[in-house]
Image 1 (tube, rainbow, N blue to C red):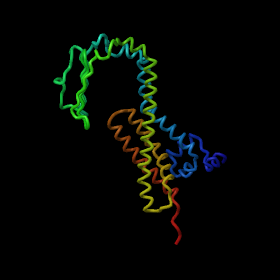
Image 2: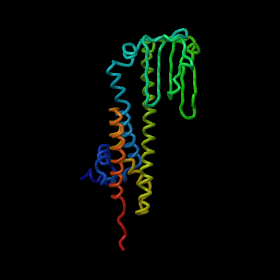
Image 3: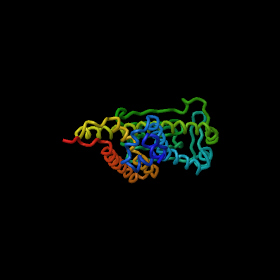
Length: 273
């Protein structure tokens, strides 16, 4: 009984907020009573969970599987070195994706790549030789742009597997920074998605009744995306195109259904004649 009174007064635990947002759209009026701080903390926790599933867990699992970044660089990557402006890799590396038009070639048996070596039917090309890197972009805005970077221009830099592995703490720090950036990107995308859903629902509500405020509809959209966000993150974690597409479709459908149910719970009854 005490828990029910707390919920009615807008005092819900984090677990109750998740349960209600995901499975109890009929109780969304309780979520709308939450303070701004509790809504922000819920969204922050949700985005952290989504970011961990989609980005953090795969990277952490890979690092653990190889025994750390240092072990991966030394034992898994091909032997490489850069000294006196000459780059060497122990094996030829080639990757081509015809679907998106990306081609990457690392062949340090080639002294220097030139523009003549570029396949112009690709969208993006990167060729790495022993003395230079040449990049080609044929995307909108930079059509046919060719750039070259000579290793000799980098100065007296000398690196190899061991020296890069020795920078593991810096690499870990960089990974944390990247994760924070991805977290912020995921948060912004989530907020704008909620805005999109809220605008559509608000337009529909204006045709039915003009008494539901936009901020209430936006709050509904914030909570209604919870299931879809988690399912989409899991689908992206699995990584296959079929799962990613199915996850996105499922997220959209479930969000709309939950918003529809919640909306009719907060919509005032029609006036009596």
